[in-house]
Length: 378
Ligand SMILES: *[C@@H]1O[C@H](CO)[C@@H](O)[C@H](O)[C@H]1NC(C)=O
Image 1 (tube, rainbow, N blue to C red):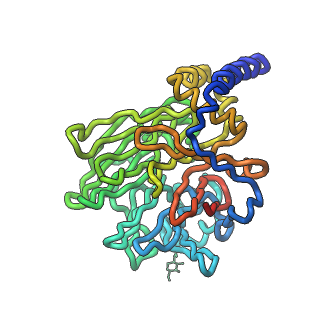
Image 2 (image 1 turned 90 degrees about the horizontal axis):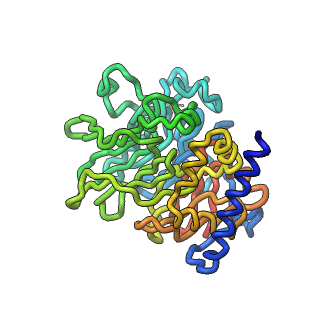
Image 3 (image 1 turned 135 degrees about the horizontal axis):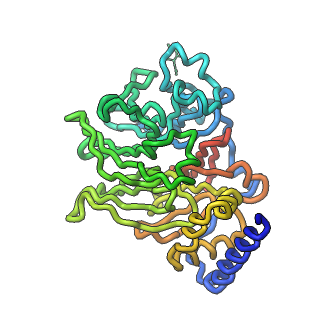
């Protein structure tokens, strides 16, 4: 059975690739190929004290950092000149901090916390933390323990099951965040993809009224968020469907949602790039995805149902690179303009990339699983 499935898949891939080679010559996608020992441009910074998984990074109002949330519930701050991490905050109660430190056990995430999306308010110095289990939280400039920002009772007795992305609207102070699923928790993320769960939400917290509004419901793995440069819309990654969505905040289209592009990878976090467009981190577990698509025909159907121009572009990239794409940069219309691809031993290191944040000529590469934070100097 399995062999037949693989043969079918191989045939499908071959079909994609042959389509591709025709398109491959109009190479309008810049490709950044990263190899181990690449003239010292790539550095893998080990996470502090046995923790792992710097899923997302943020810089504070003074440009210091990055800060990253890790597996044991802490947010760490990188001091580049001293080349070490210091603790910035924890999501857990202070009495649990000692026993949580260095935990990589998903079974403890609900008590230790699991910070994912981070965003500084550069005016107040506050750090907003989307903690997968403990909801939307805030750390004051003088504090080192986060406190809930959204009142726990806003949705009755139901606790947060999976808060994920966070973004701020500097004009209004509103905070946008995603709840990936209301049925499954972070450690059950595969169930969300496999079951096709669509209980994800895009939410808005209004600091004036302290109310929470559900802007979009019915999302299949609501994930990363990024505000456009002009503040007119939010970009949102819907991981299960591979879609990048646009939620209009202003303009006559305000409050509506539209599709920007459908990718043939699983997109995670979105970060605007200073060179234009935005970076999307990709979970590049192609082997696993292939495995799923054999076991779950609907997933294969999904891949096969992608609009041909996307399939062609994706397959062109795969063909050209022949290996692992960890992130792509898209323009605001959703066209791929740059791809990052890793080779050799780095394929294992970056087997599941969550985010690429470009800042001052460096790409910071976060992963929810890796024990390192990657930094690549362009
Ligand atoms: C917060 O501060 C207290 C008191 O200085 C310290 O014991 C604790 O380790 C700090 N926690 C973090 C996460 O930095």
